[in-house]
Amino acid sequence: MTTIDRSLAAVPQNDASPQSLQALDWFNFFLAGTLTGFGPFVALYLASERWTTVEVGFVLTASGLAGLLFQIPGGELLDAVRSKRRVVAVALVMIAAAALIVAVLPSFTPVLVAELLLGVTGGFLGPAVAAISLGLVGNDRFGERLGRNQRFAAIGGFAAAGLMGLLGYAFSNRAIFFTTAALAVPTLLALDRIRADDIHFARACGAPPGDYHPTRPPRHARTTLCTNYRLLVFASCIVLFQLANASVLPLVSEELGSKAGSSLVISALIFVPQIIVAAIAPWVGQQATSWGRKPLLLIGLAALPIRAAGFAQVDDPALLVALQVLDGISGAAVGVLTPLIIADITSGSGRYNLTQGIVGTFSGIGAALSTTVMGFVAQSFGIAAGFYAIVGVASAAVAVCWAFMPETKQVHSDSGVGTRR
Image (cartoon, rainbow, N blue to C red):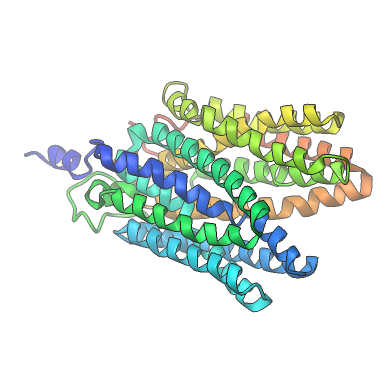
């Protein structure tokens, strides 16, 4: 066998077994359901337990900061650990424990501990799913796989939100967190059905093909990520997008205020994008292979300023809900393309998961700043001005992508980051 033959054999591109791929579908479904319990339901439950707004805000902020701080270390961990299933299993146990703590001990210190546990797991669970997916199918079918991940996650989140809402109404808000803990069981079972041998370790961290020990792939120096032009431009687009996007629903909620039926409208504003993501995410993954990444990314980014401009102009609930279709388009495009473009950019570097952590960190900073910055604009100049500020920032993301972001579909690396085939 020649050196070239050995290199090609070192990182096989064959598909994983049908069992593993079907198990990944169900894993995404149940994982989204498990995480749904820690969405808006936490604030609702703690308020019913006579927590003050300041206390609720503090523990939720602490959880968010823990997740933000663990993004980069979590990426390093995923690049280094061979058995990513075990890391994910530990995270699921932590989530179940956090849910039980919140349900049984809804006092400040235990809930703070639970939220910190949740934040730490949030730092690497999403990237871990992407890494497992990449290890299963490789770069060539990664887009299609990410589309399926998004579809099953959206359906799982939608179903779980409905189930938990009914349980909370029929029994108590505490039942939501017992349900969250229970959902960790089928999530773990689905994870166990993913065959460990199907997850290629080197492929899952974006390592180059070559004749090396399968558990010790070569890696590029971390500093090369800081000077990678495509990565810097893409991260800038995502940060600007999150800086604009994260404050849209809070502003809409503030605008609706105490209007009759506002809670029902807000629920629809949350559910409609999930339906759209479930419907079109696989299509986005498929078209990313034929169209390329950049056109779809532009569509996803451009939907945000159009949506924000619409929110600034209308206050009819039906029109507000209709505009949320654009949020589903953005969610499907950005959700599928972010791990896919990072895989393109870092192919051959052995630093795929670390790069996910870096982009996730800056994305989280943008989202955290969003509500403060846009809230200040809205408070000072009116809610319409807040929406127009979102339009400006979101349009900047589109402009940066249009002018500076190269197409990454053809970028694969055998010897380093950014080498073209």
